[in-house]
Amino acid sequence: MDTAASFLSTLTSAISNCALYSREHPSIDEFARKGLVLLQKLFGESDNFDIMIIDDDLVINKKSFKGIGLQTTNLVKRIKRKGLARIEFLPGVTFKELRTFIPEILEVGKKIPDFPHIKTGVIDIRTEEAVKDEDVNSGESMTFLSQQLETMREIYKEILQLRRIGINTVNGVMENMVSAVSEKTNVLGALGYAHSREEFAYVHATNVSILSIFQMKSLGIGDRILLRDIGLAGLLHDIGKLYISQEALAKKKELTEEDWQEIHLHPFYGARVLSSLDGLPPLCAIVSFQHHMRYDGQGYPQTVSPMKQHICSQVVAIADCFDALRSMRPYRKGLEMKEVFAMMRRDSSHAFNPFLLKHFIQRLYKTL
Image (cartoon, rainbow, N blue to C red; front, top):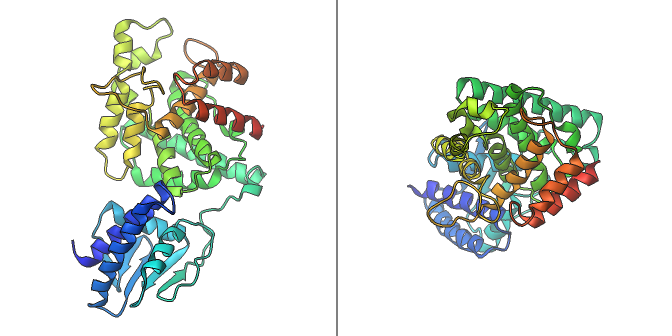
């Protein structure tokens, strides 16, 4: 990897770690130091190091650059989300400047401070934070959310029919979903209801997606890439059911032991398929594999070594169970919200992370 690619990879890793941990995490210092060394090498070849975004392409020192794969895509998205078209690093840049600049990329809607040796150019367009908190329950924003949900349902229907995921399309719509959902959104009013077994798969998938984004936003998570990723993970969590007997899934009578054994394989099938697809975040495969594991580890699939359920899998598990219980199924009617919460509370600390479940219930009541 040449010096320019190394610097871009280092910058992307620094920003990602900052989003995953905190602005003060020591790994950010390490990446900033490494980045500074690489910049010094680059200044030996040129008077500056110029990053430009043209459409979705990365241009380095006026030359198109496609050198670090998925990291390039993530860097472009973060820079565009910040509303920037250009970042220019000049000779004389200090560790303090670079270290302060890195977390600023994550602050969407906030102006970047002036730096002596780091110059930025702004894209003069409306940012993706189109739906402001104070407007989330307005007719316009709820209509926008409904439109995104309907689009997502249509996309999922195509996935079920064609067994093919249009990753770019799904990513684009999920970006809009992230913009449309807020912790103040009347999320219950936005959820769909399935009126038949055929409708349940795609209606449930989109409901779990929006409920997962809602939970993360209400927990204070503001990183849009992580929110998009958990939305995708929620949407695709049950994709493994495409590869098991549809007869078993459609049964109205009690399932046999053989039926259950087959159904319990769907997290494995889902994780195997999702992990093989380029362009999907690894979180999708993780959540697909873990969403039935339970908080206490007593669910399925069982692993050779104990595996702690990822916190995003815990979030999706709560959304999955809530929507399944409130929905009509082939073998029962949908339950009232009070009944759903009572059942889920009984499983708190066993099936579900008790803090996340309590927070979810409280936040849903606040949107009513």
